[in-house]
Length: 104
Image 1 (tube, rainbow, N blue to C red):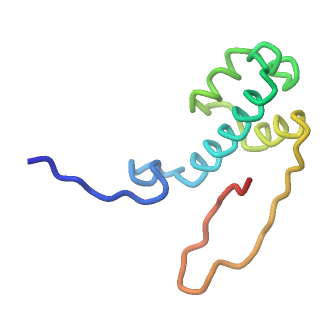
Image 2: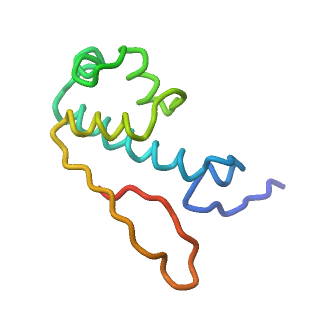
């Protein structure tokens, strides 16, 4: 019989990655970038020119391969797509661990 374990809200943490929070944030940013590109019917080549990064790097980012792509670079991609990016820092809720997240 196959055992099934309920995961958390962060697949990277479930996989035991030390950088789980960072990877989740990057995945959320990439999802937003991809959605905006789709809405604009933008190709990866067009996006690469707009973002100032090579097309293969855009492709890697959209496929969840974030090596060499910082959160700052991803936020700059959102700015290039005409988005307002705001970083909010607030205390963690009582009894809960502090977290990183992207709200869109």
